[in-house]
Length: 415
Image 1 (cartoon, helix red, strand yellow):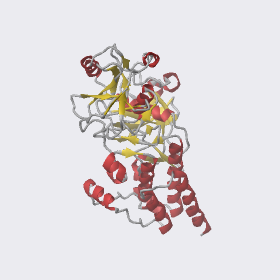
Image 2 (cartoon, helix red, strand yellow):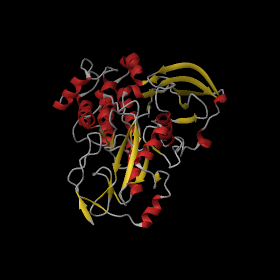
Image 3 (cartoon, one colour):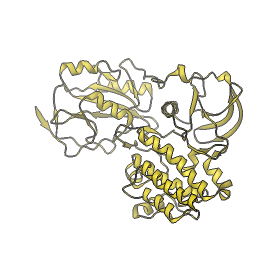
Image 4 (cartoon, rainbow, N blue to C red):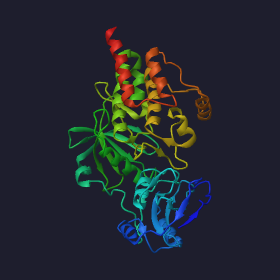
């Protein structure tokens, strides 16, 4: 067995530092196991892999191939995050001296399929996460693979569109009725505004979430265009608008109750290994009883180790983000806790914008220096201390925040 030092890579590739790796020949039985995976393309060259990936033109399309050197394997992945024309990055699968496999040295596994499975959920240093396996005959696995269409597919003829509720960069949300009686929110992708695969990914996430403080998925329409997501409709709409219009009339105990609603939903996500990554008042909805539910799961990710490193060029909400996201694009349940603290601040300021008169660059500099949001006028010192704990380097879990917010609520009731 010959030991070799890790080669330096370009800035856009994974940085391998001092971990010693060895090039070993994979056993024949291990190679046989690889053959059952669609992403394994045994006998294709680097050029052929690039042709396959460009032909599919899918963000995160990838293949695993045997390199020119026997027993060494390479992951080839396609991305448009670096160029609108698309680029391909090639990552050699490294092996430690204990015969563990890795692409990013902090994430080491006992087999190549385990490495691929991890990076399907987490870019973790790659230019993008491995989203779609491309077989040697071309054609990605359909984005709807693993999606139970029989259970979730809704006949579009059963939908009646009533009025527009809102629109954004990627699509429009309309109020509608399903089968003539159930009010629903219908989210439609704007043509060409985003990858259809990302829209489908959001629906896939929603199928796995079931909690009274999370907006629930009713179904999808994926057999026609535009793609539609049909979800629970909440009468009082966006929390941010609700706070700005009616926040002044709400008592402090009710504001805290809204925080607790969100905390319950986020506690569920944390317990089930999901990161929301875009928690803010604008992404929560309010029902007719003023109960708040977490919504907008477009950036939500299921994680295997409570960490997610976003790919290069990914956008994020600066004023709701902790230092590790601002500087390293590293997410965890603790980054959601930071955002929850900012959301508490939004609620108790009746919908003001955090760091309102500061640019994003100024906010990054302020946060890095230790500057934090002031106590909003509707928050007690005790409540502000809960917010402040969310903005420490070491942050409490959502379950702990819930305990302390209950103590505050008991104080309100006692007085």
